[in-house]
Image (cartoon, rainbow, N blue to C red):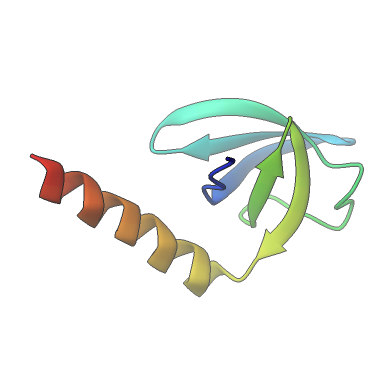
Length: 73
C-alpha cells in the first residue's frame, strides 16, 4: 500500500524539484508534471511527481495527518 502525502515544492531546476514534507526534503522528478512550480503541492510516487494538488486541499490533508499523529500521543 502506498500512502501519498502532499509535498510542497521549495525549489526547481529543470525537471527536478526539491520538495518538503514536515521539514524533510527530497528530490522529485517533474517529467510527468512539467507545469509544477515552486510553491505548488504535489503527490509523488517512486520519486516522480504524479499530480499537482490544490493548495487548500493539500494543507487540509497535511493538517489531518498532524491531527492523527497528535491522537497517537
